[in-house]
Length: 249
Image (cartoon, rainbow, N blue to C red; front, side, top):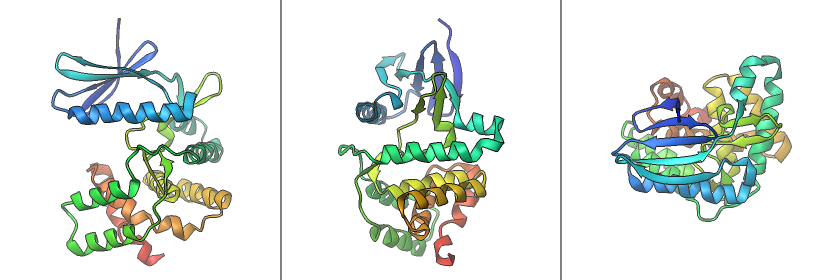
């Protein structure tokens, strides 16, 4: 049975094998993180149903853990936006609809978003103590909510299948927390590619929820700091520029 390699990095390879996705972790990848990802996905699929491709199995093969999931066949919103740029706003509206639907749920067993962000900021080794203090102080003053937050919602993580149903993938960063923090995370993701799309998305969210734009913007420095821990070279410079940005809004 042939496997198609979809993506890879130093910690894992992702294959498609017929109607399944196989996520094969490197031999030294922490066992607890593999089980944690499977656990998160299983708990969220129980809440969101068909929107989330299900975990099918978790196996140890040749010294490496393999997480097997359902394959959501279709096109990502990212692909659709690139093919039909005139419909970008329409697809962003759908993405926000899905994000608000997700945030209407609670999954109590998930890690609290504020706790995760605090840990990430403390792990940053290349910011000065003054900046770290300001970020942690800002984070401490933000409300502590319990809404389901995807943590990495972007057009490439949303799939439209042939029947017209939407599926959301890549739940490894999911937490319980503040909806505006999750929106700020998506705003940053969009802004790294197209600032106008990010602004449109923020405007949509604020209009539909009655949230002040400044409240979402207040989250941007801490969200950017948390994202810096991923150490993606193509993002580093832009993210650093957001650490102090709210002081100038």
